[in-house]
Length: 511
Image 1: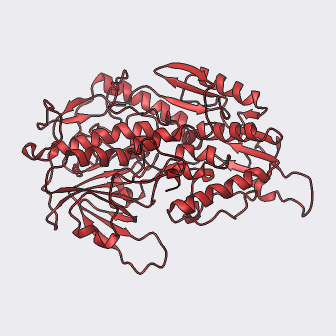
Image 2: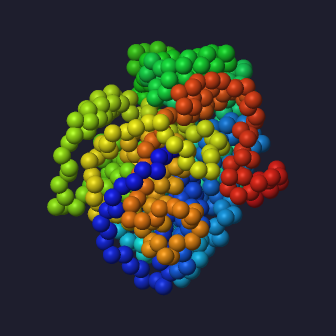
Image 3: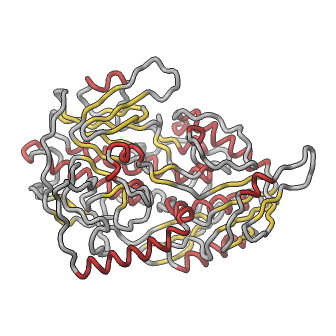
């Protein structure tokens, strides 16, 4: 959510490209990136193009992954075609003059250049360098293991001895994604005792879906805090806890998993006895299947490689201005003097950060907190007034690079799909303001496209969490409530419609 405030236009460096067509690259095609590309494409003048880069062939609707990793028959619906952007091969990108999408892996980013590689290992296609005038970095975060289709590529990732290794290798195609979710369904079906670690939205959704679909299974939810969904109203915790208990989920709060017990645990061949793991306090939990629903980290490594000053060493988040521009102050820049309100905000931020460092791994599941497909066409106004950005920066060395979504340290905004969506709108509109006004097309009459840029202000937290197949709990504008109108596929057709495919049939969702 954002409020259209005005900010002074930061001084920018001269921008150029070696190609006749000037380029805006959007890195990442999920909720924020796809919205940014859409806004840019509608407002671009002649001679400009949008290049949308994503390593997946289809948009991954990750908020439905927990349900589709448990319930069979709907997994294909989570992979939505990029029908609104024509596809180009990697080798043709430099010479293409129209808006295009390319499936590729981003190897590096510089202030005016990205390097791309083909997804497939052993491909004969070489790396491609692409120069750009502006960039929107919307690469989000690395997802927790149970829904991370790319986890096979990560080194040093914590893997439980309780998790089999049959998950197929994923290279970014819809067929591979379907296969990966189907393999997860089989693992859930085969387990008698399931342990879900993490009391955010992801953990709650997994635990409640498994318990609802398989009431004979023993499902345990372990959370290190005393409250579920700790970033939201107390009533959210109470409703979520009640919903889990109604499904006979064993909920253990205020306890941490002893990861050493995973290595010591092994089932005797042919034994009918369940495996047992322990908490740090010694409490035993039976578990044939372990789902670690914590550990989500910002995907900002490319920015850090470009300029280590761009990323916080503590949180891994990218520093941004309220205009959503990447914030790295010039060497000669002197921060403005602190006002009394600035000091109060910084003290508040310090207090929050100190509390959250202890439980940082448990904050990540709340990233999965979008009110799924209830995304309006325009940004609503916020009732939240944030005093000043925590990273006091008014000018930047990278005025042409914008960062949105889970990768951005965006003034205490929750990490969610709808948050990324609204931040992307601000970033895209600001890029359109940079382009000379007489080149504009498709901008509403009366829009002020002068030298001022729009600022992002986060709104109040909003979330919807399923509690089994039909029940859900939500918080919107400070109001907490429950619904019992849920359907198996989570109304996924609404998201397909938002992607330009209205009235899509079941058959068409296999495309």
